[in-house]
Image 1 (tube, rainbow, N blue to C red):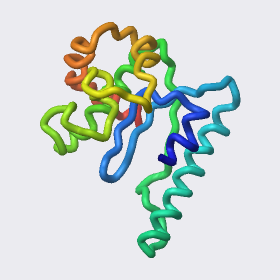
Image 2 (cartoon, rainbow, N blue to C red; image 1 turned 90 degrees about the vertical axis):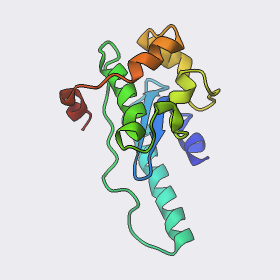
Image 3 (cartoon, one colour; image 1 turned 45 degrees about the vertical axis):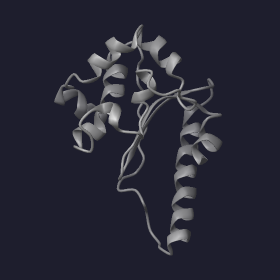
Image 4 (tube, helix red, strand yellow; image 1 turned 30 degrees about the horizontal axis):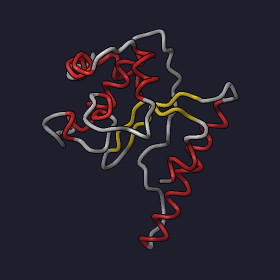
Length: 154
């Protein structure tokens, strides 16, 4: 997997969701280096992926609708918690599934213990958030997120 090769040495993945037309990665820098260089690796990986798909499909042009964005999150706020919920709720909000745990392409199942994750550092994320059991996390994951908070994601 290209993500493992290009990004895991720079980031701890905390949560993710792969959607049909976009994706979300919540990451924490591994090093106290200038994270702008690490973020550039995401752009390089996406460019490489685009080139490979274009070659395979005999096409040209971009694959992604918008430029990749990165946003720093202060872990002392509830924003991190809302961000994780927003990421996990994407397939539900898009009416692709009836329950969050039905979407195979997110870290939600890993958070609630239905799958063993080797990609995300679930324990680190749970420690940052103060999550102590899967049941409480599951219940809180279905709570609606205030529209004002959602607009802050973009």
